[in-house]
Image (cartoon, rainbow, N blue to C red; front, side):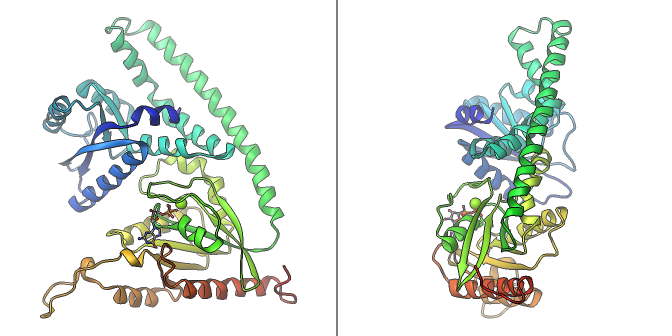
Amino acid sequence: MGEHLTQELTQEKAVLVGLITNDQSEDQAKEYLEELDFLAHTAGAIAIKHFTQKLPYANPKTFIGKGKLDDIKSFITEHEIGLVIFDDELGPSQLRNLERALECKILDRSNLILDIFASRARTAHSRTQVELAQYQYLLPRLTRMWTHLERQKGGIGMRGPGETQIETDRRIIQQKIALLKSKLEKIDKQKSIQRGNRGALVRVALVGYTNVGKSTLMNRVSKSEVFAENKLFATLDTTVRKVVIDNLPFLLSDTVGFIRKLPHQLVESFKSTLEEVREADILLHVVDISHPNFEEQIEIVNKTLDEIDASEKPTIMVFNKVDAFSYDKKEEDDLTPVSKQNISLEEWKKTWMAKTGHSIFISALHKQNFDGFRDLLYTMAKDIHAKRFPYNSFLY
Ligand code: GDP
Ligand code: MG
């Protein structure tokens, strides 16, 4: 299903639409659209223009207002654009109304994320997980697909056969969902047996927002060939490697990156992948310090960790990409108000050392401060190892 969409999207021109609402400032909305742009790029589309609109909340019928809808319509007509992507999840009737008004393909953020996950799923496990999420997303939106057919037929046969068709489709999809669920249960059982068989080795899990450098760090630490590229969700499946630092062995796992507004169907079906995180002894929370919104990203990751009961684990905050960090120097007179833009790396270090003793600033790509990172990880892993094997440490 997903692969199809990705192929269709290749080189496709698109416009992006987001809202500035009561609980989403203008800067935030712009930043979200930047991220959506990146997602669109990852899926193979080129975003030609970003549209934003100030509204207290989304219009229940068309997401945006009438005037903005007209603007977008004339823009896409003039530039021959066949795809409009909305930053939030659209309801079935919003989708239908927008399709009617804009007469082109409409996607929302969830849709796009599901599609990217689908095109990147490698194992049977993650393919099943994504497929389940896709069907769950599709089920309430079936009417919309029918409307599509309706239009092709010139609007004839609005009721009778249409209803029957939808009912049949719905039943098929419900059966499919049940099948995928039981398949996942079986895989999950096998997985948990596998995890049990790994014995009592100290387990370290990389967590963090997507694209912060988790896979790069995994590569650097374990010298394994994990997929790393500048696209969102480059890794989907959990990769586990045995790593040894100074005779101390432990397991390091790289997991799926967290992202804002992740479709809930996806979180639900990826529970077992997140199990790896839940069962870890130590978390390495990787942060992209060069990203303007890194603090918000930390919050989103913490919230997700909280949801899976993993927020109390010993955690090292790994501030990555120090090589790409930049800031505006404060003026000599010191009258410039302190803002995120003019806090130096040294000041960030002090702030985070005060908040948590376990933080380190590195560049995974250029192996900056790698010894410091290794030492910190070693010290923490050794503590846990010593507690677990009080009489015979380092036997492996
Ligand atoms: P993940 O999604 O968290 O696994 O992130 P990746 O490891 O795939 O990295 C995402 C992008 O960030 C890639 O283009 C990496 O080359 C880049 N990257 C990773 N670490 C660093 C770093 O220390 N400095 C810089 N400048 N870029 C980095
Ligand atoms: Mg990765």
